Amino acid sequence: MATKSRRPVALATPMPAVTPKRKAHTGASKQALLDNFDLEVSHRTSDMRNQLDSALGGFLALVDAEIFKIPRAMRSMTLGELEVIWRGNFAETSRAMAEQKFERAHPDKDHAEVVAAAVEGKRKREAQSPHENSRKSARTKPLPALPGTPAGKRVTKSKRKLPAASPLPKSTSMSTIPQDYEFNPLLPKTPKFPRAPKRNESFFSQNGSPVDLNGIVALDDVSNASVGSDDDDDDEDDDDELPDPEKMERRALAASLRHASPRSKASSSAAARSRPKRAPSLIFRQSLGAPAQQQSADEERHAEIPLSDGRTITFNPLNLTPGRIDDELAYGGLGAAEKKRVKNRVQEEVVRALTERMERWKAIA
Image (cartoon, rainbow, N blue to C red):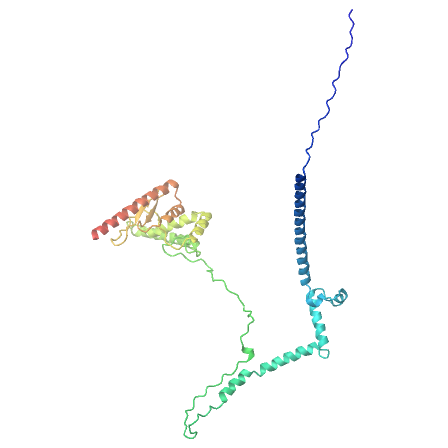
């Protein structure tokens, strides 16, 4: 059986640390280092001195400003003297010092007496003004005699003596104080009662004044009753007579106004007040079945467009405002398709009227 034996382990010895050798400084390098150090020290010293000088200058300026706030008469006083005469601030203290100085200079006179004497002297000077005396003396002095002219033979014309202007009293002089005048402007007078609409006027109050629509409805009701009774009589008298289209138009318009909603009336009246006074471009009429009136050759031709609800739009093609056509169609209660159709017809009528006018001008030329 084999036996194990230990072998001695040889340990490695540590290597000694190698330190680098420093190079020896020469005398020139040492002198350069010392010069650099001296230069750095001098630079930092000069910077610190400059900072201290600027701080000291600012402090001295602040101190001088505080000292200059003190009046000259108080700079030489001690704290005890200042405490005796102190009045809370420099202004009141300076005034008290001036009063004391005046009292020491004039111990036998009172300040109130001095002020009263000064006021009295001013009044006397105003009462005896030298300007008035000089003007009066200049007027009353005789003219000096001219040399070489005999006094007995000299004849002078007496000039008209002007009346001396009397000085105005002080009470009537113009005052510089603003007068307290009463300023109470009145509001413009507004109509107490709504006015009756004019003939062929839009009922939306274009000029802003209130229009009495209830009176129109009441009058139309009365006219309807009277027209009904007249119709009965007329039917008995003459069955062939045609009805009056204006009366029937008023009755139809009154019926449409009665059925109109208050909200639409308010909105339409508010919109109409914001526009300037002008007659409507499109006139909506209730179709009555009566024959149209024959227009003379001198009058301009009015076009008519029938609507689906039985009404008729009458307008002058040569006197239209394009910006108001949409609003007037909206006030008429038309739908989108109906408005489009009416606008197309209006455009066609305008083109036709302009073409006829141009042809007429060409014929004249």
